[in-house]
Length: 277
Image 1 (cartoon, rainbow, N blue to C red):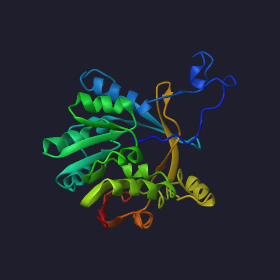
Image 2 (cartoon, rainbow, N blue to C red):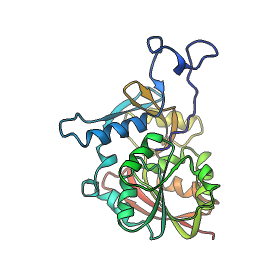
Image 3 (cartoon, helix red, strand yellow):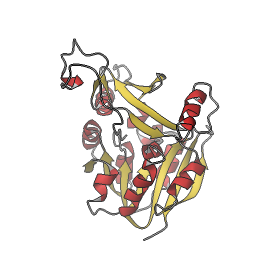
Image 4 (cartoon, rainbow, N blue to C red):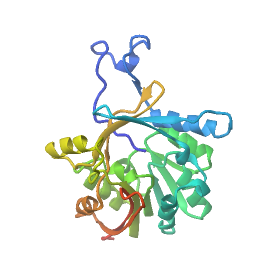
């Protein structure tokens, strides 16, 4: 998962970074590669049947917190949810960019199917796990940075609700144009989305209303991932409705051509097709 920083750490001595404080003086988690640490720990735990489950803590900027296991981030394909396997089946032949590759579960399967796969992530720890599970082509960076490399791809994969990496109404067109700059003729984006815009869950309604008052998409989330005493920087994650995705894609070189809903009613697979060569 990509985690662009949106706020700076505060506190500590003036002129001295918070993470440079003595651990005994630090208040709150230190900022670092929490996702990478989680994946490395989960990868090691997978080899030990007696190991306790590795849990990520997801913290929203209004104080809402939940925990979730990382099992699905590293699981073999026969343990995946049906919708994840369905998304992988939509990937075209040829070169694939797995964006927010995490521990490389999708990249590994696509390689086994004969695809030429590159795993892209901003987490060094995630890419180290990718390397350990056999993924050969690794890119540490953002889609914008990689767009200047001259690489071309037939498919872009955003598995595991990673359409959230579009971040915001302002950022999404930039993200999609970066992918268009790397797209071979006829390329597709296969992305999983999580629609919080239309959520009626009581724990989400006040947050959605706050977003709307601020001019944001209701389903935008500002959050961070925590593991032990480490947290990612705060980042935006866009849990948008399919119609919002179609609107944001306009003028970026992509067109939303298919939506496959899941049984959950909030999750879906989107296919976007390149409209320009």
